[in-house]
Length: 312
Length: 317
Image 1: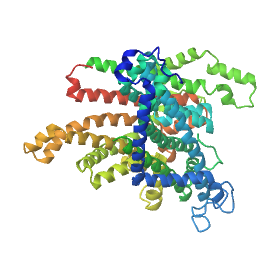
Image 2: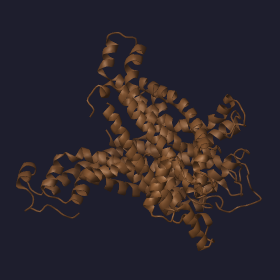
Image 3: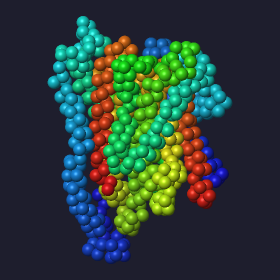
Image 4: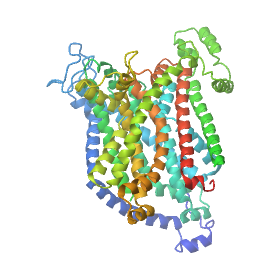
């Protein structure tokens, strides 16, 4: 990706018309950087002023603190069973009550933030990198490759994401790595679709014609020329997907194919404890559920405000 | 137009073949040795080889896919490892129960969300619009089992107005059965409401901003006549597409809701099959969900074409 314009190869005409001062890429990239930098600062100010963004960030920050330091400030050890204190209703000693084996529900909710906040961003990142690469290649190369990948994407997306992920997790067995790879891979298909559309809009612009005339290599055009111009949609897609990643991971855990017990996990805890709902033990199910809801809503608030600022 | 529909059907069939390949790959190739998976780590190697041969999984993959795929076309969904019976002999009652729950959710959500979208659009920018849009969007991002838990705690345990489980006692009347399906249906409604309402809102706003609506208003038609005759006819067209695509997701959401409410539908069947490593049953269930989704999108496209005079009367492409 380090190729820069070869003066001999660069056609004189394109240089003369679009860039008399020479060094086309450097000049164009410099100008772009300045404008992008200015817009970013304004957008950042706008973002910080948005109420939805602040509320979302505060909630997310709380869960991140829980994920990292949770074990040290949780009132009890999250995995210490106590057969004398099972199914206790919320009280001063156990704010969120205890579950069927006497574990403290509040502690499990706090520590349970860890796995989901570890897997979701990694899976989303993997999906974004992979999806961006596929989408760039599809949009720029077109032809048979685009057709083939497009069909596969359509086929995989003709199932609900949760089901696709479920199918593959069941096939290869549940583990943290499996979850990251499977969700990342499934999401990459969706992200590829978005990136492809954005690339198609860029495709006819002059700077790409110029790059083609300069005989730039395909990876250079894809990653150095096009990528910076489609970063906006990719960023929005990332936040949207992060929300869905949490949705998907929580759901897989609930179905029994996510994070495995006894590791505290919201989805898995709900699956186990919901068996006791009919008996009236609501706290051990309700509080993990509220935790998932707050995290998903927080991420969507952040995503929505980023989208509102970026797309104007 | 017939050419367009034909092309669309062809495309759906290609997608279906690809989908079956994906499912086959995930269900038959990835899990590794089927015999070992069923018999466990302590079975003798001879027993595993014998079972592999009996199941036919020792044949080349192409042969396996071909016999699986052609079997499905003939109505043979494979032999369930767990039940020791053809999948087709027990899968249909499960599908039926799932369709009942899905249909119930569908009947609730479609009119409700279209109405919500239109109300939001007519009050664009006001408090009603903001509340409707924000709530519906938040609700559609929360997993079904999370909203389901909250609903159970509030309405079944708190107010005690609805049952905790989805299973009505055998022999109960249609109305009683519906009462048991209300709580399971609402999480599905939550997920779909946001998408459909957003689409209905966007379509209505686009129609409200159009020249023909301005003309209709300026020539003195009463507001509700303008809305009914000019706005709705145009605004609901894109909404139909969204409704159909969401049908597929509705079937997917069933998996989660059925587990929470212990409802014996296709979702419960799939989860149990996954737990038992009963891949033929799992594949059949997932393929069914995919087919429902493909059929729904296909129907949506065709309806859209038939209803939209701009496509119907214009040249294809």
